[in-house]
Amino acid sequence: MLNWSRDELVTVSGVPKSTLVRFEDGATAPRASTITAIRKALEAAGVEFIPQNGGGPGVRLKD
Image (cartoon, rainbow, N blue to C red; front, side):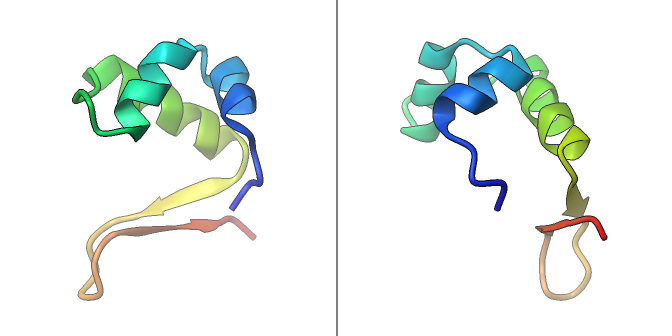
């Protein structure tokens, strides 16, 4: 959606690359602080998280 590389997400979120890789690979469940850091980085870039609304939760870019 943002066309970011993994390295860009690491830089913007402050989450260590090894943590991000383990999370993406499903090798570990991320801490709440990791999820928060990633979410804040994505929201700052214009991603909007949509709550469950009949069709399920999702994401979109803000106008």
